[in-house]
Length: 110
Length: 117
Image (cartoon, rainbow over all chains, first blue to last red; front, side, top):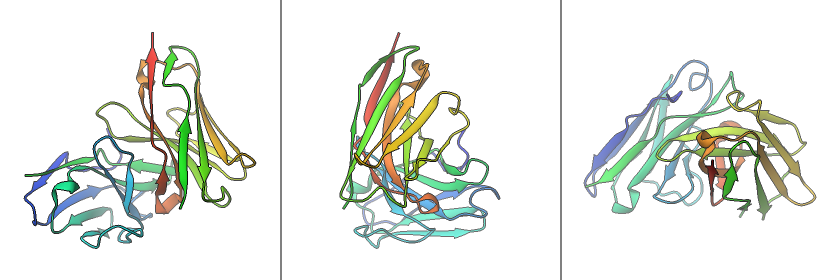
């Protein structure tokens, strides 16, 4: 049982826009920002979005994040086949003084 | 550009100690947290703990009684030790540079650790 809640799966066709949701609580997303990771098959996680909506250098602008209260979303526009993989949301957890994660959303490009 | 290179055995016997090292290049260990995570087969990510460059550490309570993370700034390395392992500790283990609230921006390549009977 993950601390943050994500849908287990999402899908879209090439060129479409898809969104992945993430919900938390007052002890994590309610007071800290949200980060998103992309994990392509057989690879390590990659930081995709940090601080709710900031993209690290090299991450395409078609990836965007937003947050309101204890809910957040990752949006991917202009979906491409190479976007297929797992996406995880994460936030700092006050009680742990460490990060917690969602269970991950498997994105399929149809 | 930071690079994190993991090393350590991929097979550990049950009840023994899992030991992994992460060697950092391209950046200083100063002023960051350095974390370990794991991912059980087909499962999500679990934070194990972090060590600060000063040597202070914090661990996930679910593993706290069995885990130790240390840092050697002179060698640009930090290490994970998990004792009394069981089959439940079989997982892919990752090290990372952790910016706390801002997430982990550099990751090691991952080490598959299998706990054998």
